[in-house]
Image (tube, rainbow, N blue to C red; front, side):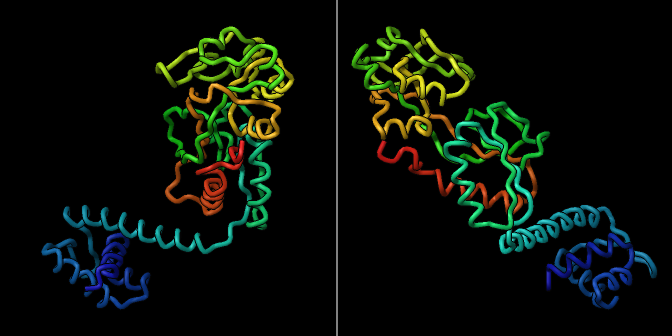
Amino acid sequence: MDKLNSLRAFVKVVELGSFSEAGRQLRLSRSAISKYVGELEQSLGVQLLNRTTRHASPNETGQAYFERALAVLADLDAADQAVAQVQATPRGLLRVNAPMSFGTLQLGPAIADFMAEYPELQIQLMLSDDQVDAMQGGFDVTLRIADLESSSLIARKIVAIDRVICASPEYLVRHGEPNTPAELRQHALLTYGFLLTGNQWKLTGEGGDHWIQPRWTLCANNAEVLRDAAIAGRGVALLPTFIAGDALRKKLLRAFLDSYKAPPLTLYAVYPPTRHLAVKVRLFIDFLVGRFAGAPPWDATR
């Protein structure tokens, strides 16, 4: 028995209430439709349709089977479309939202390379550190560096982002290098003050978890500002490596307390739920994973 054609014939008969009309829609004879449905009923060992000379309608069992068959055929058609999408050239508008610093330091160059691979795409990028509503904002993809709250959105992890405690070499010469987390309390600290955990720094190492309430001299909502202040010798900062990496390589900053680790941040790609992800969105997210996951470029030789 050709199960797939039998399912299509059965569903069409139920939808149209007629073997003849189903045959016309599927471009098959009435006898072919009747044969398919009959074979289906025979294989199941149950009657699915009530028949008259001019009309066919499902019985209780047939109605339940119809609903399942409809879902199966829809999934099959969707799978065919998904394969076709993979072969299609992505085009049209891709709207992306991302954090400001990550956007300027890392995402900008990545997008330029992505555009070279897919020249028929238009990319609209909005950078903001605000928690933008991805659904209401109409974005195809929103990049977030955060612990995600529960929502109807779908999130894919791109990369874990390490953080380091660092200061300028000149600052450490003047004030001494802390050897334990507790000694940080004696220093001027530069802190990002708008995390869910507040201003506290959590460091894990010898002795377990250490929580430091910074006696800060600068509190900002942008880590590039904190990096620049640290380079200028204004204090000690806890910075994501995608922001501090270049200054560490150039020895403008020096990391210390390496045996104590701050919890890493995570970069996610967030997008609205959909039965089938648009090929342009899938390709963009796959590109970001390929570029940043594993050993991210900003951590190279820092």
